Length: 162
Length: 162
DNA sequence: ATAACATGGATAGGCGATGTCCACAAATTA
DNA sequence: TAATTTGTGGACATCGCCTATCCATGTTAT
Image (cartoon, rainbow over all chains, first blue to last red; front, side, top):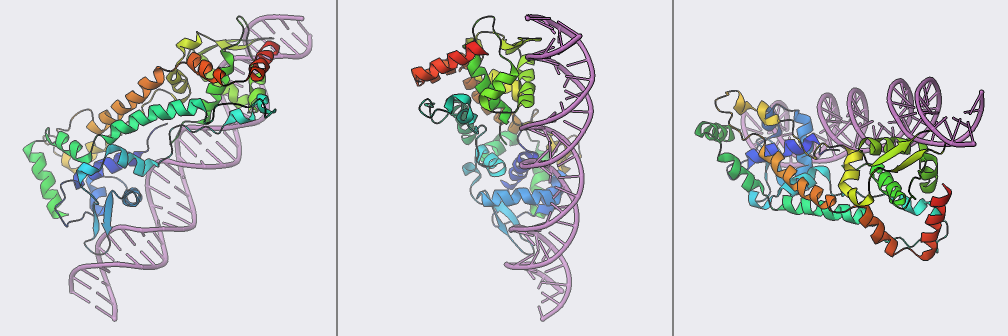
């Protein structure tokens, strides 16, 4: 049970879009070449990011994608939720409602909702809240500290050309 | 991306084993009948619980399963990990190591391990730690508060008969 | 010996993740 | 206007995992 590879595609693609010059876009073709990954599949990922309001698109020649809002307003959780969806990690199908003790409705007095589900979802909320505190901007700043000048320049050059 | 139905099977099965009299076991057949679920599939779930040290088994006539340790020493996370495995929610395949900026090894100075992975796994640890604080014993006590006397007796009767 | 139980392997259907292909719409450029 | 480039959405294929079943085997009580 793991997050899909699409989450990794999304994070690494969005990372390079933080420093995209104003009014400029980047196309799926260039982004997929950058990472050496499938072009058509990456387009599906960006379709999800667009529907989630994380990026915006411009069709036509010289079109492409750009961040739909400031990188400081895009959290880790926003990105994960855009790709993985909003459903919680655990939501039971309520097998307890079918067990032999509930044949008599007068006996069925289980807490509603199921306490197991409640506890797991509360724990999951701790994770979500933590991921909401880290932004794409923060990631960019942290990672750039370790980038050599050569690498920063290489990225800047690449962004100018696409 | 959700926890499998096996997690729900495990929780609801283990719940009824907390009050199992000493030196007594419960078989897969009875447990599957209790919940109205697949007998053969539930046996696979219990196989995982046994390998995780949560239950122990006794083969042969009148054999079956019992808790391998006190319910206060079985945490929510123990149960989930037994069924879902130990791999973290997010572990990237390191696509960054294939991008066009790392053709020159002198430029590749990314933090290792990947900061994205680190942040997500730290957030996941918050969830794990929360789930480790809740035990099967705690669940039993909380749920029993809402059980009517009739239901408690019905469960006790059932446990005596199996 | 026989029946009741757990154990493990083989197998199958369903479903989502990954990935490809194609038709279409929109925008630029010639 | 025509051609090209780009995103959009649907259909499709493949693969692996989840769910589930079946069977062979080992173990124990009666």
